[in-house]
Amino acid sequence: MLIEEINILRHHGLQYVPDVSRVELTPLFRGKPVISPAISSSEAEILMGLCPTSAISIEGGIQIDLGKCVFCKECQFTCPGKIKFTNDYRMASSYRKGLIINEGEDKPVSVDPAFVRKEIRRMFRKSLKLRQVSAGGDNSCEMELNAAGNVNFDMGRYGIEFVASPRHADGIVVTGPITENMSRALQLTYDAIPNPKLIILVGTDAISGGVFSGSPALRRKFPDNIHVDLYVPGNPAHPLTFINGILDIIGRKA
Image (cartoon, one colour):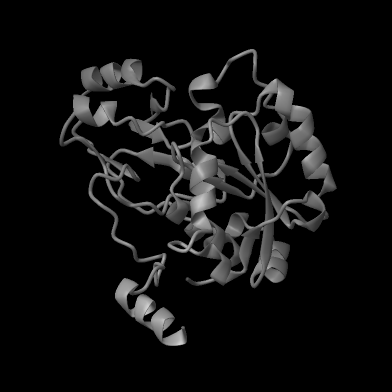
């Protein structure tokens, strides 16, 4: 039996991503955008009116807010060659303004150590247990988070795992736009996690409300009243975006 299992392993090869920080995704992946400074004012106005979540703005130049962007690529289709969504999946940020992409800049989106609480890296560097709450999500980000722990991405090798109870968790991962019906449950889960607790918003809906922003069905007081440690953009967020963001904030190399 052992020989048969060894032969199966040899036949299948490695089932996991050896280095999650150096994966080359397909060019079709919708990752961090790059904005050309050659966009005219008339084109910028068209793009602003086109964006379904008002992620595009003009403040000293055209900007795309990854916390609002649904990665539909309509702006790229409208201005080909001037806006391009790259396959760069490393887009997590430790502060909200870090998700703003400015025209003419191609610098990476990353976790700024200045915005990381010292106790986070001191306590969670080798082991991090998280409680995930779907606050009105559509199950897209939730499925990607499940994939982060599968045999392919295997974030458990870094000591990062999801747990069933907030009493056993070191932090909370929020997905979904935070509906009124889920606001109290989310707050109770947050309150049940012992301090210091890591707070992570995953996906456009969780970060800004996404296409549901402004809906009377939402109650977004929770992210407004707490310190958020990590923003993971995407619609939905890719497992590699999530895992690399976590590794960066706890100060651990892949």
